[in-house]
Image 1 (tube, rainbow, N blue to C red):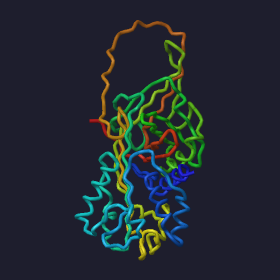
Image 2: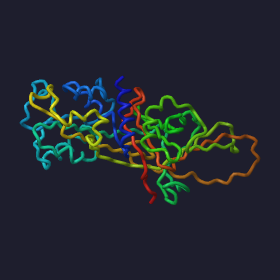
Image 3: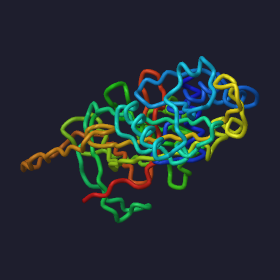
Image 4: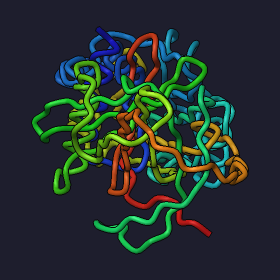
Length: 360
């Protein structure tokens, strides 16, 4: 139940404000915690988004911060994070160091709004996440030269891979049209799903559709970004060829800019948290920092690795009587991705890539 609701939050966030990287999963537990200590309309709004707790299966920083001097209930005082001073020069380094330490990897600074509120009646929500995983089957670095679309004429740093497993390539029928989904299996129970649709589909709609339809997609050899052909080969085993731009993205999000998506409309406007303190309290700021990288060796903070090209050995021409199905999926238009915890199906991270790395 909690995983499904967290994924719904991710899909809703994607449809409202898609970005290079964001994590609804790293916001959901904070909203569920606030719901448990809220009162009045704010409680109902928060429960509608996050009705049950969720233990995240990855390392991340999750915190509800209050200012020094704010009266707290005994229960909340026993479990709350260190207190903020109201001075951004002190609070920013404190929050940023906390975020990187808790997430287990460097993350971008939290948005300025998170450390800006100095009011004693303000509660600050902060989350940060940086997921890392190696690939079961690494990619090879290369160069991609799109011939159409917004990247036409650019030399992009790309990742290439080929193998016999066609089942990792699927297409889902969605409200945004057919969406192609490619599963890239990672280690540490983390997979990355690359997703794309026909040109013109809004990024938010594609990401939201991929989030909700990933489990219902069916294997396919036709669809957006997919081409298939019969080619001469030494055996009839099918072949899947993958070409995708390499990317590294980071983002800092002000969650109150889309307060309704997180059930924070009333919570950010009036005092509604009797479980935190006896006085009037409101959510004065809510921020998230995230980072992601898709490289030859894995997802996250992995250095790019370059495989040496195999030596070219002349092969005498011979007639071939065997034909192989070669399916190529080429992400040469802006595309999205989902980072999924395999055992639970939780979408830990998501993002939309419209500015991949350029080849040097």
